[in-house]
Amino acid sequence: MSSLEKDLEELVLKESIVSAAGINADNLLIGIRGDPSMRETTVERQRYSSSVDEHINELLPHFEELLLNRSTYQLFVGFNNGEIRTSSVFDPLTQEIHTAEKIMDEAYLSRQFPEISFEDKIQLTRDIYAGLRASPIYQRMPGYWHNIMKRRRQNWEPMEQHEIVSIISTLKTLREMPTYYMRNITINILQSLVRIQFNCDGTQILDAENYTRFLEENLPS
Image (tube, rainbow, N blue to C red; front, side, top):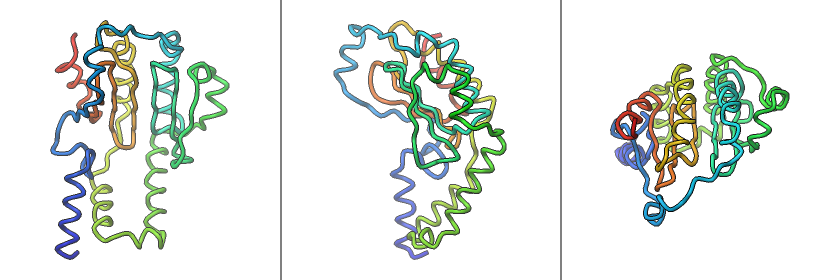
């Protein structure tokens, strides 16, 4: 690559919150601040009990099933509004929206989410990106972006299955904390990232490997 392209590559990686190697600068946590008025009124706002809250014990095993044994690679759980969003390796460019009541239904789960082993899901991801790289349109991408994508492939590690189980097991506790509780969470097994919004302010983004450490260091026991 030219000197300019090398400079552009490093600038893109530096600017990205999540870079080719994951969260930038090996940080445990990235925090993005939001509406400051939310911090000021946190204690005054009562927690709203949604359909997710009402059926959390039935939903947690299904969340685990979606990520471990079904086509879902990304799961969003909106505790405040009962909205469940999923992304599938069989249709990776779209996002599907479901209600908590639907996700509780075993028959609905079987119809909507094809079974696939965790290992096959990871292999299919590799196959999808291999197909992209073979496209002549992909080849027209700037040279420095080719190098960025190559670095992503070299550094890519999906979330491990035990990490998924561990994260799901904490959701009820995070939601039921008395003052600073979780509003929503996104779990992406392909990026090995967890994105959490609490009721106080902003967004927390962390890698799955350090998820337990984050809870131990930042949340009351």
